[in-house]
Image (cartoon, rainbow, N blue to C red):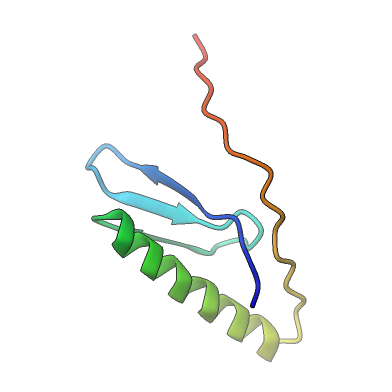
Length: 72
Protein backbone atom coordinates (compact mmCIF):
# COMPACT_ATOMS: atom_id res chain seq x y z
CA UNK A 1 0.00 0.00 0.00
CA UNK A 2 1.31 3.44 -0.93
CA UNK A 3 0.51 6.80 0.57
CA UNK A 4 0.04 9.95 -1.49
CA UNK A 5 -0.50 13.56 -0.49
CA UNK A 6 -3.84 14.78 -1.84
CA UNK A 7 -4.80 18.44 -2.01
CA UNK A 8 -8.47 19.38 -1.92
CA UNK A 9 -9.76 22.81 -2.85
CA UNK A 10 -13.27 24.19 -3.26
CA UNK A 11 -14.17 26.19 -6.36
CA UNK A 12 -16.62 29.06 -6.77
CA UNK A 13 -19.50 26.61 -7.37
CA UNK A 14 -18.77 24.79 -4.06
CA UNK A 15 -17.40 21.75 -5.94
CA UNK A 16 -14.42 20.04 -4.30
CA UNK A 17 -11.39 19.49 -6.53
CA UNK A 18 -8.79 16.92 -5.45
CA UNK A 19 -5.41 16.38 -7.01
CA UNK A 20 -2.19 14.50 -6.33
CA UNK A 21 0.88 16.69 -6.85
CA UNK A 22 3.23 13.70 -7.25
CA UNK A 23 1.05 12.14 -9.98
CA UNK A 24 0.74 14.68 -12.82
CA UNK A 25 -2.77 14.76 -14.26
CA UNK A 26 -4.29 12.77 -11.41
CA UNK A 27 -7.31 14.77 -10.28
CA UNK A 28 -11.06 14.56 -9.82
CA UNK A 29 -13.98 16.44 -8.32
CA UNK A 30 -17.05 15.84 -6.17
CA UNK A 31 -19.90 17.62 -4.41
CA UNK A 32 -18.85 16.46 -0.92
CA UNK A 33 -15.56 15.68 0.82
CA UNK A 34 -16.40 11.95 1.18
CA UNK A 35 -17.33 11.80 -2.52
CA UNK A 36 -14.13 13.49 -3.70
CA UNK A 37 -12.02 11.32 -1.36
CA UNK A 38 -13.52 8.14 -2.81
CA UNK A 39 -13.06 9.41 -6.35
CA UNK A 40 -9.41 10.40 -5.82
CA UNK A 41 -8.66 6.93 -4.44
CA UNK A 42 -10.12 5.47 -7.65
CA UNK A 43 -8.13 7.94 -9.76
CA UNK A 44 -4.89 7.06 -7.96
CA UNK A 45 -5.53 3.33 -8.40
CA UNK A 46 -6.15 3.77 -12.13
CA UNK A 47 -3.09 6.00 -12.49
CA UNK A 48 -0.89 3.36 -10.79
CA UNK A 49 -2.38 0.56 -12.90
CA UNK A 50 -1.64 2.37 -16.17
CA UNK A 51 1.84 3.43 -15.02
CA UNK A 52 2.72 -0.19 -14.13
CA UNK A 53 1.46 -1.43 -17.50
CA UNK A 54 3.74 1.12 -19.17
CA UNK A 55 6.70 0.33 -16.92
CA UNK A 56 6.72 3.81 -15.42
CA UNK A 57 7.92 4.24 -11.83
CA UNK A 58 5.55 5.55 -9.16
CA UNK A 59 6.93 7.68 -6.37
CA UNK A 60 4.68 7.96 -3.33
CA UNK A 61 4.88 11.44 -1.86
CA UNK A 62 6.04 12.37 1.59
CA UNK A 63 3.55 14.74 3.17
CA UNK A 64 5.17 17.68 4.90
CA UNK A 65 2.24 20.03 5.45
CA UNK A 66 -0.22 22.33 3.82
CA UNK A 67 -0.40 26.05 4.32
CA UNK A 68 -2.75 28.73 3.15
CA UNK A 69 -1.24 32.15 2.68
CA UNK A 70 -2.89 35.45 1.93
CA UNK A 71 -1.22 37.90 -0.41
CA UNK A 72 -2.31 41.52 -0.70
